[in-house]
Image: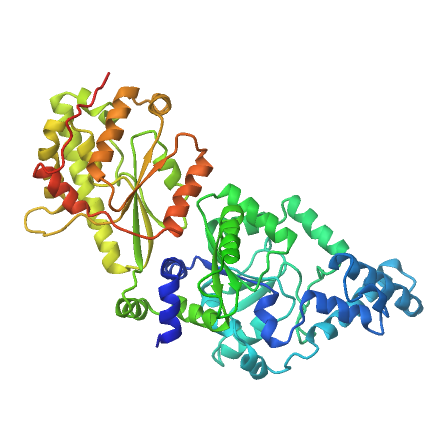
Length: 552
């Protein structure tokens, strides 16, 4: 795939976001969520325009419902329009049937027919005509095909028609349309979910039984959400990374669902495209404030893009790894980001890391830890210390090699790692630092392997020693406050400040701590700590601590 100037420009502006979404797409965990803005260039009306068309139609004759300055919410206006429509059509329908259920069904069919005509007014009738105008769907089609679920808040079938146009002549549809995500569907097909209902251009295709358009159906949708009907959507957001395109966040149900998802999964972030003019660069203070609010409230990372940017984004996300890497290298852009989460036992790093399942994660240890590791290291017997040391050295070597191999295999995405190689130095008394550093270097690069400690940005969590001591006791670990204080001071010395962010979590809830870690990962500039040099400096005595760690 040829990645040109637009892709290069976008990659420079949002390298971390593109790297993360590209990796999520490669493992089939990136999902798209479309709103009305995605269909804007196709000629589909905005919701307000659609309501005005219906209200002013001869079937409703409700022009007074939609003055130039609207005084009521659109769902209520739509509800009023429906009642005017009902009263005008009721006599004719009653001539066909006196059965109450039949009357409701006939009225609904006529109402949907009116909605259909007003929706597709001025929209190209052929798929080539749609493709000529389309600035969104065709560029994101490869992602739709790989995605577990594509959510489309629009009624129309543009995406379905473009998918059919793109498929081989002798292949099946390759997708299925649903309006209830709780119903079973084929795992081999792309799933297109329409929460507000489905109204295809060709009415011979199956339409949904419910169209969420007026106040009554909106209220029912919100009620369904509160009752748990949308639990599958919350599960979808917790398992996948979503890219929201063409949405204004004005949908009450969507906002509630995003906020709920953010509370349940504080470390899990999605991406939101805020459409802007190409001249709006760099982002204005108002745009930055919008992005900050979206990040804080809805766990959304905001991308300010114009139509050409959206096309470039689709090309970057669908590009083969080799092509994206080549483009990044030519433009000196990083695509691989590694964060080490370090801190004393009990500070909350493992709990925090468990909230980032949308990133590539590495646990503290690859194998089950030894029972002896529950004691403070200085209190171990010589035999226990040797056993623990040998086990740790093996784990350190395996983990570092795994990180290097993962980088060579993919090299795109964001990785978060529980603990870092130099941690082992801090559990040793100062007089043993040189020897421990040498042992770690040998474990990283045995014999003539010529391997180095895998670099990354270090996030050092620190907290109140008394509180951490209590947490350790609860988890069957023995760690007095003085010992914790000594370990925290040793960590500070071992890692230094370059490529290191110290985060005090002593007054933060778990959710708040996770949010701060997420901010560092997704929003802050990325710098690396030269971990190899830190260990070499410790081995050679250039970094040392004169403070002995007290067990009691």
